[in-house]
Length: 598
Image (cartoon, rainbow, N blue to C red; front, side, top):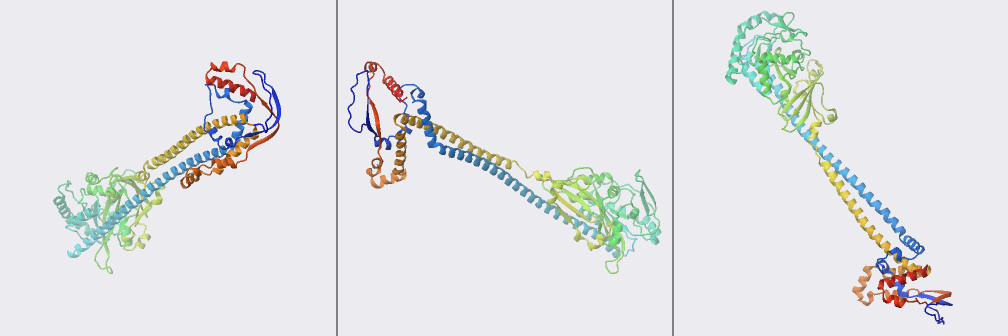
């Protein structure tokens, strides 16, 4: 727009002329305030299918437009990129931490459940063991008291004491405690040796017959008893360690001699009856410990105890006895003994030891039927003060002998339970000083098999589920980010095209003022919430502040001392355009205008 009317040359239809005059160029205010926002919303593409590159301004103008857009959004783009990486990183780290945390937490719960269950089962085993050993001590002492009581009641003189109903007492004791055999062994002094040998020939057959009748009457004919004669004297037993052959010789030397006089159940062979049990090469020897402590003692774990049991019961009967119990493994299980002193009177001040009651038992008998089915892998190490240790494993109601030594899993020794029986001795301090008195303890501990019972795939499953959830979150965010970036790319493309158009239409200083005025106008219009509030409170007129903003903005007008105004005509344009499509006419005009811009 010229600052003042100036004459200009009339041009012929094909010969344009130029006239230079000073003028002022100005832009309408509405263009600055209102006409820029559609640039970012509309496609701006017109005409036919010619590509944007064919219709775009010059490459110099396009590069300038791209730089201008990059300048405007450059910082925001960097921040968006940083936040994108930060969000993805936070999701990844959170997913890993939560997955690992859930896995660890569930494993801790499983470990706690395993520990609590083991504590419960260990308490059960401990309680049962204490009850069984209390019953074992009490029953063996009661057998010794029965011998004293019968002797006093029948006016018998030790060592010449034979209990007619020994099988009745012995059988009841065996049923209550699980021992396999019980024997009464009087102490025969050297002066009474010959007299006792004669006494055994007179009374031996009668008590055995009576015991066999009692057993047959109660349990039926479960054993075949053959008639045999007792050895007519107390004898010492020796075993060749190389060949295993046994030999007997009449007892001699200093007493006391401790012959096996009566047994429950009654023996199936004459061997061991009248044998001097103190002569048996058993180290440590439980009867020696009884003499020293004058109290009930537990003997060492010994293969000879197993041999004596099979001699009394017979191997087949002993095997049948073990087969009745739920167990697994060979029948040659470790056996031990318990011995109690027999006194001539019940007066503690004047009493003297006159014999022993010895019971033989398999250690596995205390570990049967302790756990429910399905609970496996509980180690029990049976150790004693005689430097012996054997290991069992309990699987449900069965027990398996593993071997000598502590074969339990050291990894689980922190949970080991130690069960002792110190309170069952009359004077525990004395037993600690006597080597032959083997003080037992049962060490109970879990195994890996037991712990695996309480392990499951839940920790891994939940960890994978949590990881999958976070992975889905990350993928969803990345997909959303992809959609937003694609939309932004389209907006940026439209912005570049709009910027190119503005750059081609206006000089740089005018373009900069247009952008500045548009930004200022948006700030003055306020937020969408404030405009909505104004509309609700003041009505339609007050909700349209654009006119006031436009009027308050500074006009875009600059002074140019020299300007050129050109009027031109295109030769043959009217005739040419009359036979062309509008898009073709537009393409021609756009090409001509672009040439002027270049």
